[in-house]
Image (cartoon, rainbow, N blue to C red; front, side, top):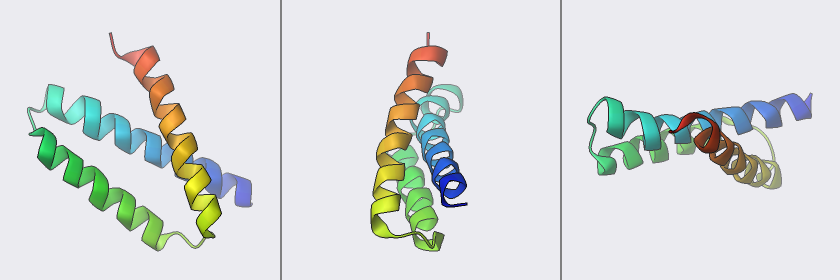
Length: 77
């Protein structure tokens, strides 16, 4: 069950990174600073609501960054 929560956190973090760094500034003409704050608020909310231990959250965020890099390589021309 813990593995599913880690995978969920990884996917949420990587999708939030993709949406706020790639999609919002390019497609919707949102300022980069606003996009950064949207990401920070969403991740802070995710980490606050999450009931996992700190090391699980840390691993999830690092793996989410790695998955974001994979999204970036695959989907950004």
